[in-house]
Image 1 (tube, rainbow, N blue to C red):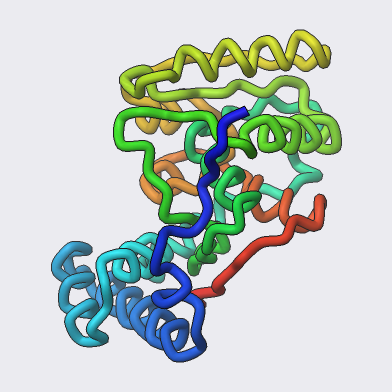
Image 2 (image 1 turned 120 degrees about the vertical axis):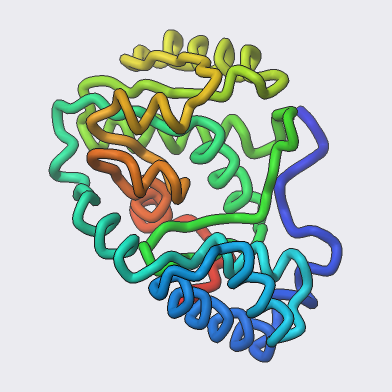
Length: 237
């Protein structure tokens, strides 16, 4: 077992742990949605708002990831499925997106709920994925979802260029064999495009995927409620 997790960074309690900072973040997210809805460029808008509220880099990352234009939010909501819609279906799961977000939740990291209802974190893999103490539990949670939703099949998709993607693929396939789960795991060089082009139903909170997919399911929000996960959640809207 590795002595590591995806919990808070040093200083996160200062950036996200007080009512004053949370209020600034919420105001920034609302301003961001206003500008995005009026077709301002995302990078320029986030810099403008970050300067206005004197926010640090991780705070800017947080409100930026949680924000979307009004049209984007409406479009995503229109394509979102309920758990009852999934029975007997095959789902494609955005591997690193879902796995790392679950690991972050279980590690007590700050999680941010966006205007589209999706949970997002501040973790990054920077080209290399490293298993943490919460990895196995995260895979177990996905297995619980698979069974409760009565899915026909679950197809994990991971980034081929990310170091150790082959290892996590093998770990998940072994878990699936041991637990008699109808799972597949594939590595793709451009997983976002692959998912948007090929999957009928996707489990992800990646903004680009949600804007380009056919249908999606909010698996993290579902698991948080169904499994009563303790989520260090900041609702941005």
